[in-house]
Amino acid sequence: MSFSSTIFSRHERLPQDILELIVDALAEDVNEDNSVRLTLGSCLSVSRWLRHLALVRLFRQITISSQVEANREGDAFANLRQILDPPPGLELEEVSRYIKDVKIVWVKDHYDLEEFLSHEDLPFVINKLHHESYGATSFALRGEESFHTDNIAWEELGPELQTALQSLARSPYLRTLVIDAVEFLPVDFLAGSTVTNLSLRQKRNRISTPGLGMDPRYELVLDCPFTVKVLSTDYSIRYVDYKTKFTNLTTLKTVNWKEEQYMSSLAIIRLSAQSLEHLELSLCGTRYCLCIIYLITPYIFLLSIGTATNTESLTFRINIMPHLKTYSRRQIIPIAFGPGSIYEPLRNPNVESIYYFMDFNNELADIYFHFKICGWNVTENTFLFEVDPHWRMLDELFTSSKYTFLQKLTVSLEVRILQVGNFQPIDVEGYENIMKESLRRCFPQMESQKDFVADVKVIDCGQLR
Image 1: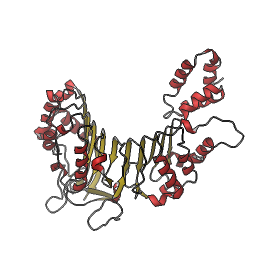
Image 2: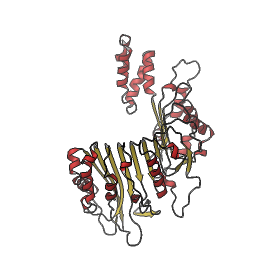
Image 3: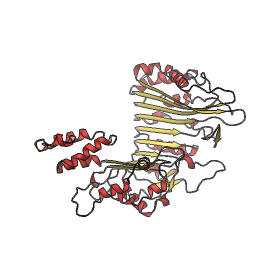
């Protein structure tokens, strides 16, 4: 006798609310543990009521990944279509109304992107996600977080998929929409939409660089609904009438590669300053905005290309956002490249500018700093945090009366190292520990009074002779 039939063999004697609690307990890990899905699946044949309870939880969240599809037999889109549109004569409960969260994810090297999104059943599945009386509340069409992932053009999706996506975007039930790595969306794509959580990003491998050119359509112009409260966006999108539509955002996440992009983000921050509660800034444009690593055994070549963008000087003050609860700053700090600086070691982040940016009373509860740093010819004494007194000043600031509400501070570093000439390879694990301890020594008060996390990851890019 199965686990579920043992529990529910006399389920008629149990109140319905107790049965719901039991099924809820079974379904806690339904998206991570396949055995839980099997257990819930066995409930489908016990009774109509248990079938209903199990269906609601089995189909509440659906994720279809190209990585999973490439590693198993079967066709997820075709199987899902069969469930959503069963053969005639079968009296089955409607499943579409229970689907609330859908993620379609493609991963490079596991499936061809165009092939994955041109599946004949995909438009049908998306169309079944909404109806006059019900609809999914969250939908994501996104790619992996990879430097080399390609974008796909809107016109390459095919007319049926285009129509299905636009129809879903206008569903009155949809609240969260994520469209990732799809370029050239039509300006009226969101016309009539009532989404409140919007994420639109493209992959950074199309960034304009001197001499390489860029498709003139690349900068996307998009009309955005007034209903958006949570916005995740990047350098590739320019919004129509944003001065009137982005005045009440509660969350803003932006990626900035060039000065004009940062200035656009800053304009949105100022417009929503009185309502923002969560802010995440990714600053990628310091002296050289792009590092490409080519691995050609047995040599490694680093090529820095791009123009200077001093986003560190384009700062504002955190006190313009009186209700901010969380602040995240992600920054790439590449190597210098040119005569006299080709072997520059690791560059310390401009902690002084961060300190003066944050030296105000506020209600922040969580702060996260992440720095990606590249360097040449590193030794165990390179880049010790104690050298810059502003790290210790941050410790004093975050434990002062100006940060009464602060509960957690995270400082994370990803360090990429290339040893040139006769410099010996570095002990990666040992250097990680040295840097982590150096960082912790800068925040003794945070460690003793609040939650402080120091995270350091060192990546050895090899040796160039």
